Length: 460
Image (cartoon, rainbow, N blue to C red; front, side, top):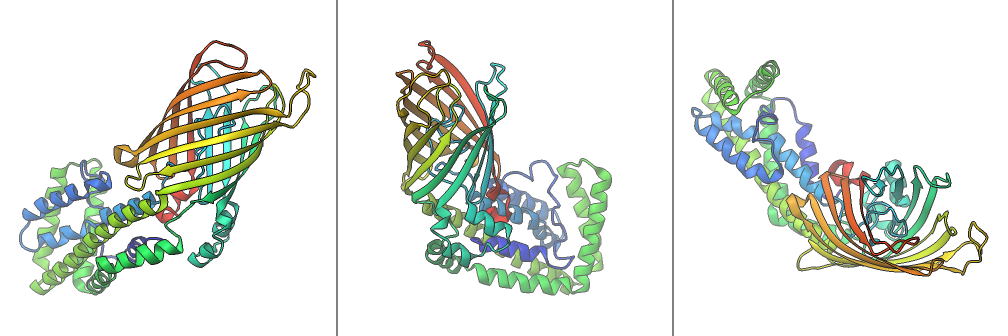
């Protein structure tokens, strides 16, 4: 795995009951269960709450940070492998229903699924469904052999992906629409690569003192869990959980009052030595959590810079269905350049050449070998709304050989990322004409994409 922080969190989850006394205490309290960026606000709220307690109460409140720190770590780890601006979402650009005018070179680590619907609001029922996979990675994942050593040894195989697109309601009744093989020539970096682990991850672990902080926390919490004080903490947790279940919806004031009551009762039953042991365990955990947060924050910065900076170039070949003229074979050269100084900005372009697979169209008219050709470019600004929104402007020029017309399209696209592995692209585009009409038009295309890697623990 790329993140030792996730491993540390998994160790925490395996410790005896009593260690996580108020784990999840604030999970359902309004204002406390926000995004990871709200961790400092939650910490301040907890400090304010602990200041209201008699001596010894703050140590218990420290332990209530357990769930929040775990969730923060998982979110940061998964963010390393969230959908990037270099990855193609949905079908490739030769498909008219694609939400992207520009084909991007990036491929999923394992598997992605997408659905794209053309011309929203027109009553169209046609939807494209695309499945994209990196076969080698997917095989090792499914067979349980996805280890760092095998990841390194199959590095060149990770640069190949395959995809297939099917249409829900095509004009000629054929579901199959497109198949493609892509080879990433340059780029396709991953935070799991050996060079990142050796040159970035190990020095960062040593610099942040992560291992020592984790060892100190393990020793303190393990000792606490085997004592009568630890057992009483476990009983207190059970009492709180019962209260919480009975109350249903609660307010911050109600939680404060109940925690005050439980802590006061617990303090009256514990000796000064017990309270000191709890204090040391709580402080050890708090120090480890702070170190973990610093480590994850820097890891996210380093990983994004390593993965995204510079060029990524891919060559794709495929076959696509065209019921009006002829099925065609195409070659697509795509590239993305992400600015090293600011990885939130990237420029993409691709060029496509298409060749007819038949010498005649459905009406029997003779066809040239050339089906058409196109060039497209786009600029993307990402990272808005806490990395939940990417915005792009794209343009495409295409020559249709059969109709002997030039088609121009200009589009704006927004990609919403509401959760790990999920993307919702929405594109609005203006076309100067269609193949059949000189009249310009405007359309809106939307889709949804699922990257399986984003659903794996730690983002894969």
